[in-house]
Image (cartoon, rainbow, N blue to C red; front, side):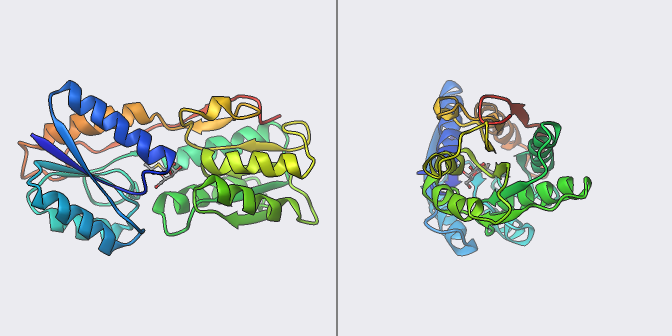
Length: 271
Ligand code: IPT
């Protein structure tokens, strides 16, 4: 068998670690994974990637591309009878999927900051074209609202460390300076840590920073990053297992969908 992976930008840490985990699991089982990377976040780009994989006669497709419910349904239709497993859709999406619970992750981050006594909380979201970025953002806002808190500042990045660095200055220049920043991924948090340092503030004494992902290097940021862990090794392992389990099961396109939990990893950027 050969499996196809349609993926978003592999220069980003999370998608590359997910792809690596999938390859590792597939190799253990004696399968091959071919990869097609999209060049922009659009339905058209995802269609192109899926068509490319189908023309290589893959036996099943993994789709790690952020897709709205309608777009996911359109891609599932494009795949026809070929089993297709989605990794970046809404938990409500009516497709075969394996996801980390975005509500759970967003809530864990907010609850951690609230437990430390923070009230002046700024948020830095991912790109709003991404369904996961929107769901984390929504989860933060809802969890804060339950405590009658609204973020003291909001900015939007593009998942990169560079965007985290740039947007952090805008958050720090607010008249009411935040005592904590919720960041939608670890790469942006890396940029935020540098910006905070250049701004002359100490982490975590003067400002707390929390990331999201727990990618391989996050324990080696300075200071070591407190974050919300998504276990990408487990995701890679489970997605290959479940897609293979579905190869012979052509009439049940939903297969065994799975919602994985996230967990809080407390290191040294929050106090
Ligand atoms: C998601 C990551 O959390 C984020 O950091 C970014 O890399 C994004 O992917 C790229 O699409 S994880 C995804 C499975 C929701």
